[in-house]
Length: 460
Ligand code: F0G
Image (cartoon, rainbow, N blue to C red; front, top):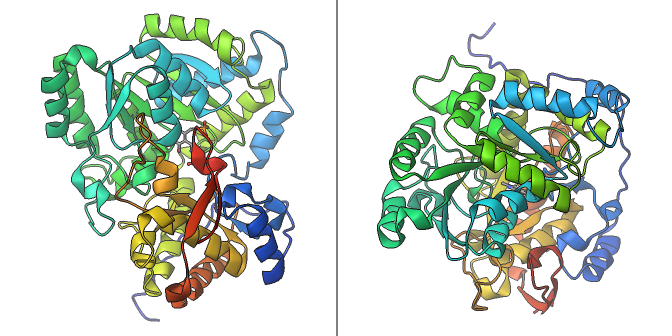
């Protein structure tokens, strides 16, 4: 027997139920794409074969979570499931106070309104669409303080989610610490390609912010995936469990917003969690206005139960290894075909560099939007633009021109097989083969907020 047989990971679960998919013809996809204005958000999901639009709310729940749904206590106030969720959030993440919300942006709205005053500056490790919008709607201005490496899709630095403390220090010197209520820190930075922040960087940030009386608010949407990368890459963490690392990350921050539709393996739900009683009190008052009573926050009892169980499953080492392992498998396949992707491969999906894939299409003609449309056309695989369309416009109406012009192939958790990953990589390679013939797009409808969701295009 040869000595160097590798040991592959495999999923720590088996299938109990399957969802049948519709297969489409090229002609059907061409028609569907035109009707959707070349925006993959506007496709009907029935017309999609493999759906990599997002990993948000698209996970497969476990039999335990489904069983939990049957245990929903649908009381208006004081549902048993709320107390279960509160208990799990305290135990797994360590935050003291919990306010459930219908999803992540509900929590972003509340914390932004509480902590931000008009004219404040919110530094963060790269923007996220909804997070920045709520900060702006509350009167703040987002300032990117992520390290430069994050803006370079080829740079192999292992913690491209790190904060550049010099950039933060410059802001503090320019505006004064009083104008900076908190630093907005995401784990597994979505817009950078699912790149992690290190514990060491977080510790340095904690020390700096403590000195200046600035809070850290943690977007913990994909914290378990970040913890996995710390276990793999950071010195001194190889023997710690993902669960231990998650708790250590959270302990370095003052509060968190969570879109439980990702890491926490549910189809809907989120929360705000804080350590400061006064902030909690205000959040509890505010949630009644925007979401629902503070013991359900826009969720049914059964949703809270599924979330409580999902959180526990999400920090299991075997689960997260298989989850990130599947993403790595897809990324490595793409690299074998020479497709330009963001490196290192991130936690929740593959990000194809559309500027490198379609160098002949200028950013104003939406290369990433174009590429997402072409991939759908080829195989019915649905991906998402993360470039100039997602970046939107500044307050003065000018377009943001993000350095990264990406197409995101987001992998839902526990949903697709390795064979699906093969089909995705092969389809992308076919589009890559004919890339020189692809033309850009023209925007013909632009909504005011978060335009990427509803904008329409036609071929230029
Ligand atoms: N923060 C991050 C890092 C996110 O990725 C998302 C959602 C949110 C906050 C907002 O949460 O959708 O529950 O209101 N991201 C989804 C995505 C939409 O596809 O990346 P939400």
